Image (cartoon, rainbow, N blue to C red):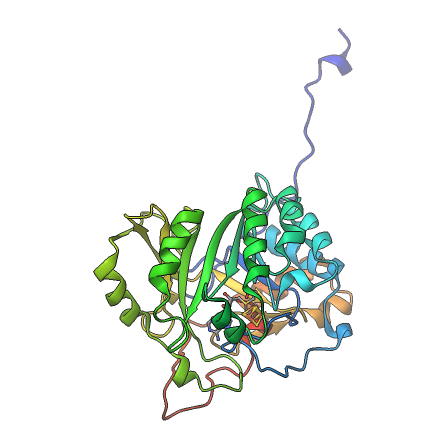
Length: 353
Ligand code: SAM
Ligand code: SF4
């Protein structure tokens, strides 16, 4: 036998993976949220002003730039990537980005690509999302009452979101409903929502409104502490602490409960009454390439300028690493009639919820 034939086949050496991202408080950063647009087809009263001014399009990262940053984070240990906005499905080239990032799901890459959406465009996109590797979506729905829905979204149509949810289910996507708890809007709606989510096979997550950006409304009028909601729900439902988070892994900022009567799960995101910053594993990239290290703090890093100035991937990795070294310990949200200003001037639609 010739020497050449008997030689074992060598697999090429893979490029060594860089050190994972660990922040100054020992938290591993493995979760990136990307807000792909600040635009939206709705104007939810807790999120935006009715007459929002949106960014000029040339300020937005292109799909190629978003893909490149996504890959850089994946190389640095991002396992979970959530696409959000604004409304991500109103961005015209959204499926290109999702398909490219979906191709990164695999052994050493991403473990999950997910999406947060208001559901209005899901009828059109649900099947394509599943084909691209998305398996779960979070859909925002604050009430099942059509009149209140139109009021809270300032013009949305409940039927359109419900049709989107139907399409998501039909496409095989698991759904979690996100509802922001709002005084005088949906405080009496949660029993019906729990029952409906049980019938549909959806999990439900209630969220406290956060003081982010001017909405033209008084947040103190809207704010409903989830401690109050929970006390009411406990009278009707049997909630047992869930062994896992919504993703079947250790929970992030929400705590999950199994609802004995429906078999579904329910989460409570309580940034005001009880924050979970100690277990924070995420950072947020805006559609303009700004990396925010905490939803409720101003610390950030501009990734767009070095990228457009020609920085190499390894230079970009160092910029990201230096930013993570500045991740703050916690937010300090407060909603108080005595202090009417928002804690943070930028809207949730900018940073990405
Ligand atoms: N448009 C998509 C949607 O509504 O799901 C994605 C973006 S939206 C900013 C993401 C999440 O943030 C939604 O669940 C929304 O309800 C929530 N949200 C927006 N503004 C908020 C605020 N001020 N406080 C708490 N949650 C907020
Ligand atoms: Fe749009 Fe989502 Fe904000 Fe509502 S919460 S205005 S759907 S970005």
